[in-house]
Image 1 (cartoon, rainbow, N blue to C red):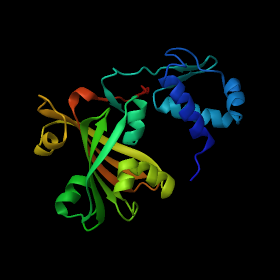
Image 2: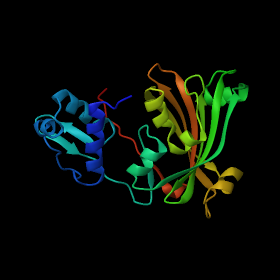
Image 3: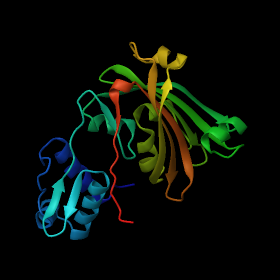
Length: 241
């Protein structure tokens, strides 16, 4: 599935903001300038700017322009935000990603898994466990379950590269919404076995449910992060009552 024009523009402006070409608190080029730069319509530029604003990169000001409000986090942190693949997050954080697949198998959802994940009992899911490396260090332990009726054909090669890239570009299924819960939990034996934990005895844990354009949950995930390499960001807008 080819990428829409606005997505290409969004990614290009986003990269310029993250690298500092468009500086914090400065205005990005005007809408007229961007139309000329990207040889596209005003509506395409507005869609890209809307996506940047939704992600907390810019803020539009009527009659003034679009101001950069993004600031990079500490270089030692791995910040999470939006719906990104691990590889996309690593690149945005200017780190070298790596993945080791520990387990890839199809299982049937029982009552215990259904209660934990929200998948219907009796459905088949693909259970995927991976160690995630950042700049060569094993720092994240991921467990994913994908509904096989919507995400068929997963392989080790796909899991090592990017499952989200496979879902969006090979299967053509949009990834729309993620609901996440963040907790701090004690280190487990699996954490100690696979991760470089040092003296840490707790993990930052993100549990999430991901939905497609039809509102169907196709993924449950639990991602366990070493706390000193983890930060989570959100963009909130105050609404008048």
